[in-house]
Image 1 (cartoon, one colour):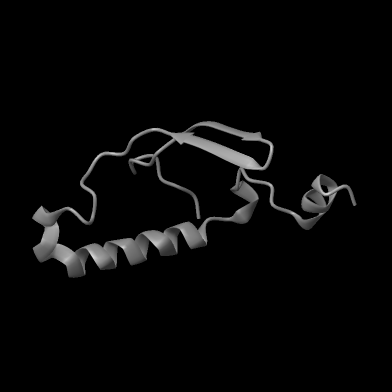
Image 2: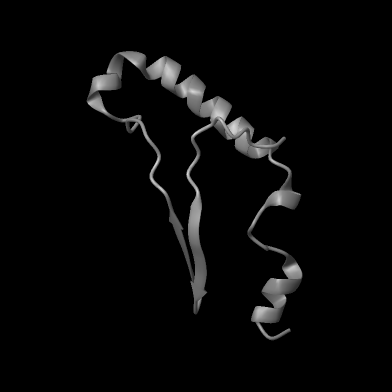
Length: 80
């Protein structure tokens, strides 16, 4: 699944590592925080949207993932 250009997604501005800590800086996305009190009446719709969003993330082809989390790299970092 590819991400359509008409969706307003956050963009990665920077990703880096220092020692054992990883840093990710992204652009801000528009909208309201789902815990905002003004959205109390729309909780069921919000939960459905969150579930669909998580499904979309889960459906992204891992070959497009910018993070390299392979066992070999972890072992190299440990000196094995």
